[in-house]
Length: 178
Ligand SMILES: [Zn+2]
Image 1: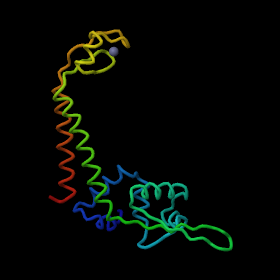
Image 2: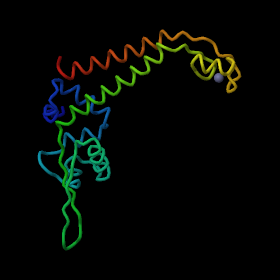
Image 3: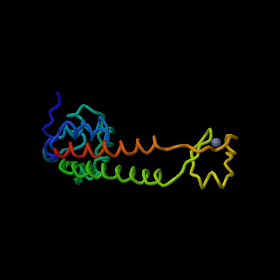
Image 4: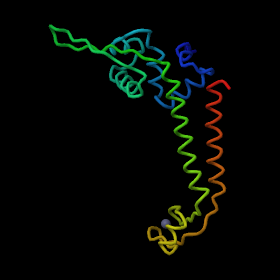
């Protein structure tokens, strides 16, 4: 059983859910790094030893975390050898912001799709689905597959998008502990 104490610092009530959600963002190796990293600073070499991962994998994860502003580093140069050491530390509390942003982003994107579906009329041939305007401009005939564009009811598509939004909103509420 994994020690989930690190995830408590995220400040969301359901730590298991936070972990699962974060896995979808950063992957299994990302979780291993975050759960293996001690408080304070650590070098990538040490972290590779602790987590029993390849140095290249650890570095990949660290830079991914760096891009998401969860990890930061400072460098130290050995004057004699010229060797540069990277000291890494992570700020797990940023995860909350990232998760909330990510969900919000997805909800907005789906809402835009939903608006398009609700406003538009859609036509379908054997190879693609296009709007009424596009189909009309092609005289309802698809050159690509050589078939007719026919009106396609999009009630199902609309329902699916609505369900997706509802499920993401539920995620958000559960993560916040509401
Ligand atoms: Zn076609």
